[in-house]
Amino acid sequence: MALKILLADPNEEWISSAKKFLEEQLYEVDVVTNGKDVQLAMYNTKFFAVVMNIEIKDHSGLQVLRFLKTNYPSQRVILVHKPMTEEEKSFSDEVYDEEAYKKLGATEVLGLPFEMDALHECLEGHQSLGDVMQSLDKKKGQSEVEEVNSEDDNYTKVKIDEFYTAKAVLFDVFIKLGTGRYLKILHAGDAFSKDRIDKYKNEKKVEYLYFHIKDRRKYIQYTNFLAEKLIDTKGIGADKKLSMLKNVSEKFLETAFQEGMKPQIMEQGKQVCENVYNLIEKDESLFKALREWQDFDPSAYSHSYLTTIFAAAIIKRFEWQSKTTVEATAMACMFHDIGKMKLPKELLEKKKEDFTDEDWEQYKKHPELGAAMFEGNRTVGNSVQQMILQHHEYFDGTGFPHGKRGTKILTLSNIVCCANDFANTIVETGEKPVDALKIFLEKHDQMTRYNSLIVECLIKSFVDPAKIIKEHKLPSNSRLIASKKAS
Ligand SMILES: [Fe+2]
Image (tube, rainbow, N blue to C red; front, top):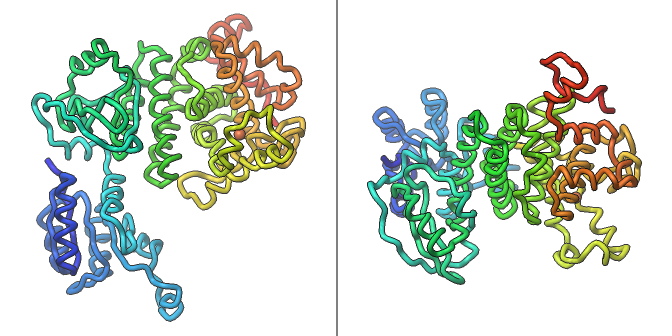
């Protein structure tokens, strides 16, 4: 069953082209050209979203907006308007901008002129997993395979063994035949066929499946949902849970880095962080998986995930830890190096050993550049920005960008710093985390970078809590927490 959209706009030409476009995206569309008809349509039908131009007459756009807010407060309303110029604002008694319309009940505001894709993105951004499933045109079997030619930049990949899908495939799935050449092996709505996937994996030795980048949101949404269920399931190893979270967090980071930190994308990131929190909180056998886990590669996304997991594992050992601190730290870990995007490509391609003094000066700016990218971002709090800013400040005062020392550095920032350095050691040595830990701890000159309690907590995250409780004859309900508050 398709999701229903009500389009309300006085411009009949625009409305018919928008209707055609949205129907091609499998929405069911009703159209009206005046305000009274919006209200009438609302009595008769339940809409997924109302897309309304504020210029609508015969019950003005503002009147209809008030009507919707009062009578249908949970209705998604995408308001279309022509933004006021600075001159118009100075002559007008009342300024109507995005913020003002949102106060009046609009969920999203689109400024004219905009591309139809922006409207599509906006509608998709508000779909829950249930909406996605509902809008799917489900088929009984599988459609025929089909060759498609399209630019490689339009596709993203996942390992064939790590591809998760519902019974009905949520979006088209491809294998790559060559540059710009893909074979659509499953169509959106097809019943999922493990046999078909296994055939490609075993007979054709296919390692990756591909899907269109416009479908990344659906993939993240679904994998987040599965990760949540998996984390709650007893009897499934923590290594599987860690790998699924890695999969979804990497795809989330890829989206955020390529499309920008848009609110809808960041909301998905919050769910990833919540899953990180649930995993470290609920899984008693996590320490085992952390010792042995080797499902990582040298990519920046993989590094960010390793940093996230070890920072969360460290925080878990502190008495003052809470869901909020773990989730905020997880978010900061994922984006700690985002400022590097603003550095020249040539610098990033250079090895650190070859850095000149000038290169170092430039490199040391990345924490500030990263923190600035979160300026005014309402989805993440100020603490995330602070952690990104301080992730290279060292406890002994030798860090950057400000050479802060000791208690001048936030404990959470120092945790991110320690987890970041430890993640680097794991990737550089290629050892299992438990072996990389020994190498890390032997870097004596580096250990003064961190509050010693943080290092203590890192070590404890590798130890079976039950064993320590037994050895130290602690009460069985003890948490393995840091012995005193970190400063
Ligand atoms: Fe960094």
